[in-house]
Amino acid sequence: MKISEKPEWGALATFVPNKDLPVYNWFYYKEGFSRDLVSRLIERFKIEKGQTVLDPFCGSGTTLLACREAGINSVGFDVHPVAIFAARVKTGRYEAGELKDVAKSLLKIRFQRPEIDIRSHIVRGAFNIHTLEDVLFFRNEIMAMEDAGIRDFFILALMNVAIKCSYAWKDGAVIKMRKHPVPPLRDILRRQLFRMIGDCGRFPKTKALCEAEIGDARRMKLKDNSIDAVITSPPYLNKIEYTKVYSIEEELFFEKKGVPSLRSYIGSEDDRVIDEENKIESIIDANDLPLPAKAYFNDMYEAIKELQRVCKNPAKVGIVVGNGCFPTGVVESDIILSKIAEKLGFDAQEILVLNKRWCTRNRVEKVGITRESLLIWEKR
Image (tube, rainbow, N blue to C red; front, side, top):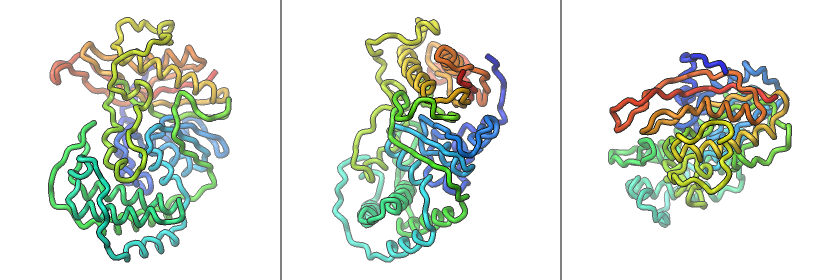
C-alpha cells in the first residue's frame, strides 16, 4: 500500500482547531480531531447530500456536526456516556429566542443552599464549598426543566462552567488539583449560556439527519449496506484510558456511575488475553506483539468486520490512528490495521502520515518513531 507524508494536515488530527469554532467548542474533547479534517475528507470522498456518513467511535461528535453543517446525513456510536451526551447536544436543533428566555429566567432564580449529595472525594476536592453548592443548585433547577432538549443544552453549559470554576485540570489520564481563586459560577454560566445561544443563531441550518447513540463499534444497530462513507478515529493502541478524566462530569451530571472500557481491551489497563480464537494470526505475525496489542487488534478485527457489513460498495473510509509505543519498540498500527482491512474486504489504498513522534523507553531512551496516520480504504 502507498505511504505518503502529509505533515500539513498534522494539526487537523487534533481537536485544537475546533476551539475557536462555534458549537464545536461547546465541549472540549482532547482526544477528538478537527472539523477541517472531516471537511477535507468529505471533499476527497465526494460525499453528497442525501448520503450517510458513519463514525463508529464518534466521541463528542465532530464528524456528525461537520456532516450536519455540510447537509450530509450522519450516524455515530460511542461507549462513553459523557461523550455521547455532548455529541447529542452539539448536533441538536434549537430556537435561540426560546433558549434566551429560559436562560434569563434561570439566572433570576434566587440561590437556595442545596443538599450536597456528592460522595466522591475527587469531586469534593475539585471545588470550594461555595462553588459546589452553586453547581448543585443550578443542576437541580435545570434538571426540573420539562423540555429534554433544552434541559440537556443547559446541562452541557453548566458542565463546562463547573470545570472552569474548579481546581481540577486534566493531565493525560490523571485529574490533578491546583487550588486558586475561582470566579463566581453564576457570572461564568451567564457568559457561557449566551455565547452558546449566539452560536445557535450563527450555525448553518440544514435538514441533514444526525443520530448519536451509545453503542459498541463491533455490534452496531445498522442495516447491511446502509453506509456511504466512514470518517472516524478509534482509540489508539496503548493510549491512556482517557475515559477516567471525565469522572467529575459523570459524577455530577449522570446517574450511571462507572464507565466501561471502550472495548474489551481498547483502552483497558488489563493485559490479559481472552481465551478465544486469535483472529489476526492468519493476517500478520503476532508472535512478537505485546499482549495488549494482540487483544487490541483482535477487537479492531471485529470492528472492521462490522464496517464491512454496514458499508455500501464502494464506500470510502477515512480512519485516523496512532502507532503503539512499547518498551520493546513501535507497533505499526496503521500498517497492521490496513492488512486486516484488506483481509476483510477493503482495498487499503493509502496511508497518509500526519505526525511523527519519538517512542521512548524509560522516558529518555529512544526505541523508534511512532506515526499518527490517516488510513484511506475503499470497500470492494
